[in-house]
Image (cartoon, rainbow, N blue to C red; front, side, top):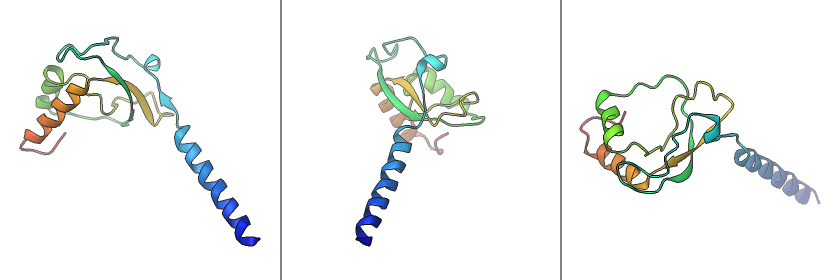
Length: 116
């Protein structure tokens, strides 16, 4: 009987922990200045929805990386930066281009220095 009670308590605790993770607040595109495009201007591919982690604080990128973002993978959106006003959120819903993510990965692999 004691073992059964312990199992029930453990299961309830696990369910509560899992529910907390899935109920984490997600920053929605309407809550920030999300791009309105539905198609990637570089790859002419339809943008897809994803939920990505937020990065807090000031993030400084190298000029070379920023140029590559602008010209090669503007909609990779595999993370969310500039989260100064989103302290209550852990994740953000973004639109991304699968081709941009592949181009970013390839660009990062071809770099001689570590990723930004």
